[in-house]
Each structure stands twice: as C-alpha cells, then as structure tokens.
Image 1 (spheres, rainbow, N blue to C red):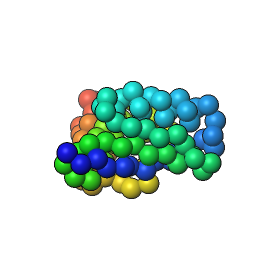
Image 2: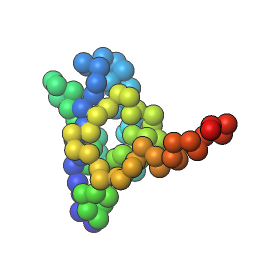
Image 3: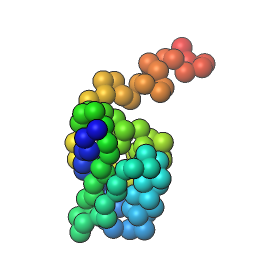
Image 4: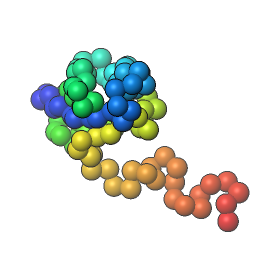
Amino acid sequence: MPAFEIGLITQHGGTPRDEQARAALASALPDDAIVSETDADGVFTVTVEADDLDDALTIAWDAVAASGTDDHLLFLEHADLPEHWRSKSGAPGDLPGSL
C-alpha cells in the first residue's frame, strides 16, 4: 500500500499547546504512521499508508477528530468529505428539544 504525506500546521505560534496537540494526534493515528517535527512556521507532516490520497486525508482527519485537536491543528490540504460538519451531529433541528 502506498504512503501519503499530509501537511498540517499548528495554530498557537510554537507554544507547548502545539506540541501537546501534535502528540495527541500522533497517539490517535495508526501505529505505522509517522509524524514529523514542526518547522519554524509550525508546519509538520503525517505520513500514513492508504489506497489513495483521499483515504490518507480521511485517516488523518479522523485522528484529528479522535484526538480532540481540531481547534489546534489545520490541514494544509482538506479532505473531500461532503457535509463533514453534519456527519456526527445530524442536520440542523435534529437536536433533542429543538423545534
């Protein structure tokens, strides 16, 4: 299976919170994933094995969600996940008690 490099960037200007987010992401990725160190701009890569780039982006996206780091890391390239903001919460008005 081919390996794909996914670029991400931290959002806190090199603070310890950036390293915590990168470490949390690394622990949520598959065991064979490789997470690079951040560069001076806060950019780093995640290398994962997948069938294609979209699958690799989805693996990284799922790991960001599972690690709770979505407020701390940004993708340099976005996965093609139609209506991804609705997949877990449902459509507007689907919440209990909503009208």
